[in-house]
Length: 353
Image 1: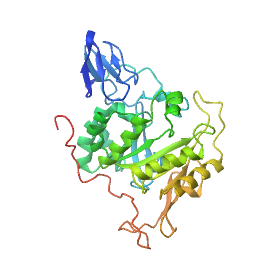
Image 2: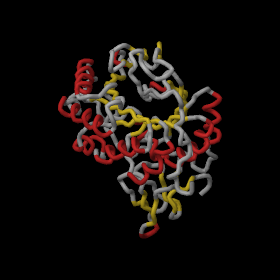
Image 3: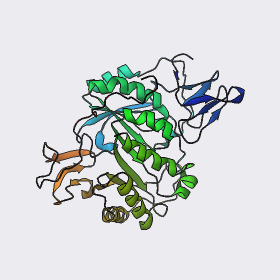
């Protein structure tokens, strides 16, 4: 098996196959083959994470690029991704990684095992490590191993995720995660089935599990003209977030540009972003942002008095006047996290932990 990491969330199946229980697809994987995600493989009857320690892309990014606006604003995050994904979105804007089918030579030594990954983050002065670019949940074991080293050293763990994960796996993985931006593609099961080869319900379940685990959660919806921009659907999404995650959950509406297998749709016009933001605010959410555009709707405002607290230009924080006590001058408490790691630094839910 070499350096490939034995995977969790697996059970033996007939004929040497292995059933993967990480995501709702429940791939039944023959010997020598990989699941839908590409990185979880059956090697001699054992499920392994072939991409463990082998990122395809590593950068130091502003945390605002994730986007996370209420977690360590103005800091950088060591960001990495591999290939593969648990969904197949026709509009994927990172498709060169998510839809890549080749891991390269998996016999090579891991490029960035957790110890080196944490050391690299600390060397660059990044208080967090972000698993991003492709779908991070398919790297669950890599994330867990990294968190075990990073969090006691004060380095936070971030996921930028599609939320396509089973409740069983979420309850193991999410307690080791400090912050997550969950990409809610649309508030429509039909949209998920037609455009993502997935389902909506597991994503909603994952959002609830993340919040229950104490993860700082922000939500992003990429607005694709004519597909998920109906005001009633946007209102329903905002109301669901309000009722199940809380009115203080940040929601980001991002502008679409034609890409991958969806080049027949126009870019999202600014008025669509404004409509969606207004609708979500009227539904009771306190912090709603516009992304992928230069907009005053990228600033954090006090929901009580309306004054600006954190100003942004694209991914840069240009001014921050939120008080050290986390309150606006009017006294309103603003849910912005300044510490990278939650108090519960160890994961009591991890098997063998």
